[in-house]
Image 1 (tube, rainbow, N blue to C red):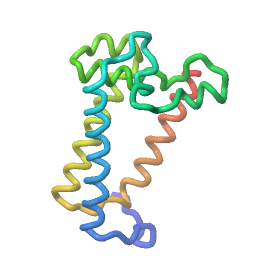
Image 2 (tube, rainbow, N blue to C red; image 1 turned 90 degrees about the vertical axis):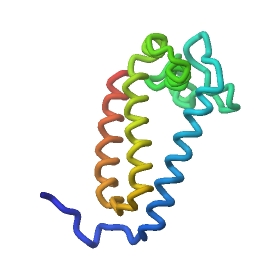
Image 3 (cartoon, one colour; image 1 turned 135 degrees about the horizontal axis):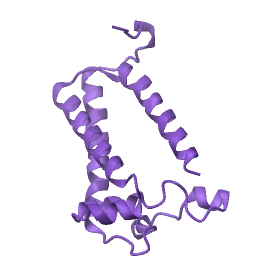
Image 4 (tube, rainbow, N blue to C red; image 1 turned 60 degrees about the vertical axis):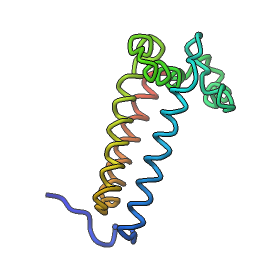
Length: 141
C-alpha cells in the first residue's frame, strides 16, 4: 500500500485535527440547516441570495446566464424539504452532490470522534476530487 512520506505530513496534533474536522462538520451542518429554513427559489436559481449572498460570480465574469453549479443551493433546499424530484429538475447533480456532502459530513464527524490524524491522506484525495470536479464542471460549459 502506498504511504505518504513523513516529510509530507503536516505537523498537526490529534486535538487540532479533531477541532478542524469538528469545525468543518459544524459549517456543513449549518449550511444544511439554512437550506432547510429557506424556501427554494421557484425559478430554480438564486436561493442563496435569500441568505444575503451575491449573485453568481462565474455568471458575472463570463456573461453566462447559468453556470454548471447554479441551482445547487436551490436543489439542496428542495432536498431538505423532502422534494428529491424537484431537486433533480433544478440541477441534475443535486442529489449526487447532496449525498457526497452527507458522506463528507459523516467522515468529518468520524474523525472528530476517533481523532485519527489522516490529513496527510486527505490532501491528495481532496486534490483529486477537486481536479475531477473541475473537469466535469468545465465539460458542462
